[in-house]
Structure formats: C-alpha cells, structure tokens
Image (cartoon, rainbow, N blue to C red; front, side, top):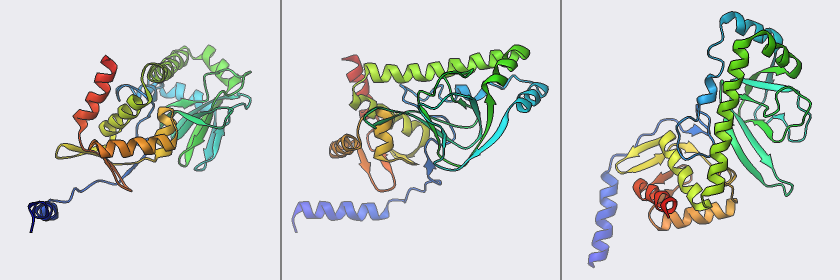
Length: 269
C-alpha cells in the first residue's frame, strides 16, 4: 500500500472520530438584526431604537393616528413607482427592501427587522416609492399616513426628533452601501459580506467559522451587486483556494484571516 493511500486512510479515520459540531437552529436572513452592505456589522440596528424616547402617552397618540396592517410572507408592502402614502413601522416580522432596474435586475438595499421604519425617503406623501418592500415573513406594521405624520410632527416635538434620528440611521445605512459599491471591487464586497455573515451568524469550529444561516447565491448576488452566476463561480474559486467550503446547508469559512487579509490588502492597494 502506497504512502498516499495510507495518508488518505488516516485522514478519513481521523475525521470519523472528530466530534460532530452541534449547531443551533439555522437562521433565516437577516436574523434578528437588520442587514445591509457595510464594512462591518457595527451599527446595523441603530435605527431600530429611534422611537425609544417616546412616553407611553406619546405612543398612544402615535398609535391612535396610525393603522395596524398585516402582511403575509412574500406579500408586497409597497412597490417601486407606486404613489407614496406614509411610512410603516415594523412591529413584527422581517422586510426585504430592494431596487429594480429597467432591465429587471434587482439589488438589495437592506433587510429590516422589528423597530425600524420603511417607506422612505419620502415622508409626507406626494411623491412615489423609489424602491420596493416585501415581507420576508408574516409581518405586522403600524402604518402612519402622510397627513397624520405631518400633524404628529407639529404636535409632538419628541416624535419629530425621533423621526430625525430614524432618518439619520437610514442615511448612514445607504451611505455605507454607496461607499462599498463605489470604492470596493465586487470580489471585495463578496469577501466582506461573507465576513459580516460570519460575525453575525458564525459558529466557531476550530479555526473555521460555520455561517449558520440560510443564504442563497441569489441573495448574495443581490446584496453585493452582481449575478448569481458570478457568485457561484467565485464561491467555487474560494473553495478551490481553501478559503471556504460550501455545502447544501452551510458556508464554512475555513481561513477567516485569509479572507480578511484579502479585503485589507485590496483596500490598501
């Protein structure tokens, strides 16, 4: 028996006796926090707390001016090009917000979770939605019509300040996305997004990190501004280079430091 065969047999036997990594229930993107294209995972959920300073009386007044709405999974909440009528505050569920180009190609702007508001950047009606929002799961929303929003801003100064903070959080989100799209190559954006997923949903397995989240190549492509075919090609390349292992259930980052260095070196260059 040759040395190569002995080595292969030894490796197979070693893997048999390795402890099996026990993973918690797999997360469905985005998880419990908002998610958008960014250089880090810091500040992803800043906008979820924009109404925290309201008193119970102010909350009661806000709810009295709003309407409770429910949306089924995959149901459109608002559609690009439709007339704007107000904003939606997410009380439960998750929302995918995306822009559709004339060619039909979509790019993900963000995944929003409980506490965030959607339906901007128009706030007081009169314009049209410049992107679309779709429920990723069953959602409950507090819809604040444009006319009511104008009235609340005048009558509740605290709410007006909260709204400014919420808009600032949205501005930081889309600024982070614009910076990534404008200053990073698509391969850098892919590497960074995988690192972010590892930081958010990763489970350590020795030196490797298992991304314990359901994520498709279509979702990755829409997030980094590419195509599913390109993402599939690059994931095969990363796998060949020993950076990741892709299975039907997980993406496993085999060499997290190498992936991080790829982004750092390209940025420095």
